[in-house]
Length: 369
Image (cartoon, rainbow, N blue to C red; front, side):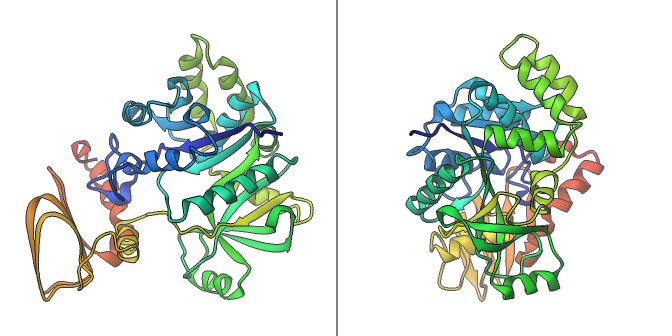
């Protein structure tokens, strides 16, 4: 039996940690940070062998929708959904579930962030196909888990238990963004995975989970979905969506579902050994390009610039496509130059770049964000 698979790409984020390249109207996911194609294009293209673009849905915002439409001409315009306001991932996933449920409740929805890098794409597709089959088997939620390589406090963790079907592991518990000590304990235990943010579930399963765990939000999303395809849709969407709870799918659905216990929750983790990187900051982009040898000199300097000269300088990241850059006696820096802004920070501080965007917004510098 052929399974109806519908990828849903979450592409509404602002990518503030990649400022000044990433802006509200040209965010991280539509930038080519990792080659000639944007992160979004790579996300959709790697799924092409198992889901054509006609099956793809994209959840984004008004500022990015025109660019996304231009980058993904094969995705039907009606399946590029513009959120009137950001409400985190639970309402976005829930809306996709109610929209797809209308046409086929048994269709399997795959939720994918729009800004991840996958090293081994053939292996990725095999794991997705296995997960789709598992998700189609009933009231099942499948999450792809990444084996942790360090005690990262910025990720969610999945505690796994017994083996389940399709090489899946039963999920005992989700823990979001633990302290450093807890993260170190999780990594040392050997039975925790990072939550990749990639999920598989049938439209019926996800819709029912939203009805159960977000009882105030579910009726709003159902009313929005009912208006889809009618002249009233934009008006209904703009009126009701801001009333939805602002919460992630991890907190809203996965954590309470896991509380039922590993043998009752029907939650499974598929270990995802395919070279994953979420490219969450300039530091992670630097590390990825060093690891994959995409760019970098013998001193560990990674550059995409009109020209670079380094003297007694190492382990720096430089982006300056229109200017020559000279580095003298510096180490572990990120230097990013655009038409109207220049960022200089230590690589280890690049997670805090988003704070600059908040300060700019507070100061009314909208032209820079």
